[in-house]
Image 1 (cartoon, rainbow, N blue to C red):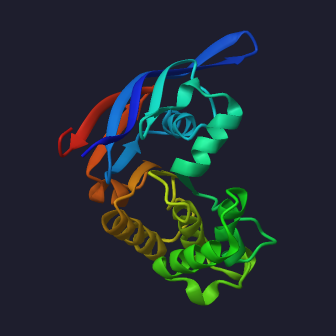
Image 2 (image 1 turned 180 degrees about the vertical axis):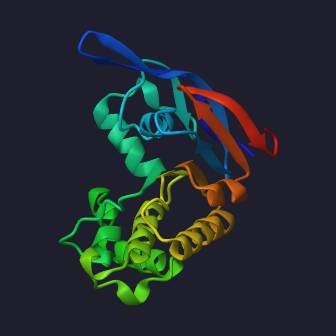
Length: 230
């Protein structure tokens, strides 16, 4: 299988007053199409910084990021946004749904931004909501949904554009144990059925237990890699 993600010697340094703080100190790894990959480590290890750089939400101090054959780190903001829209889906621990929109409208939103025709939007949104098991709640707003239901909407939104890569930042952190297991099972099933690559930032051992590989980070560096073809 081809590499969907190739991260090479990635660094990120922030300046706090007169002090330079290194968040990432030369991270390199690859993820193949259809992989289910967890990035683990204590708070402050650089997991979220790494995901933000891969997702084009921030820019590296140095290093290279290639997503499905395109060099993200070379792009200006407008072109990074275009690549995000075409190839990357996001799932956040706080769900990040738009509160005034229904579940249907939240999932439809990235397709509106992409100027997808109305008929195609409808079929893709309905299919995405059905696939995550929440079609019967499509007209409800986030405040009318449980945490697990909101995360299902967020997963549908991440997948509706047909991305090559889904980045999930602590997706089970705000869920109770039973709901977290349901969400993990859902993402694993979608990964298997659709072949979408998932990359997680997580403290959750349940995600690590089902991941194909686990990259363990500490102090901004990958300390070891566990799992198949590590």
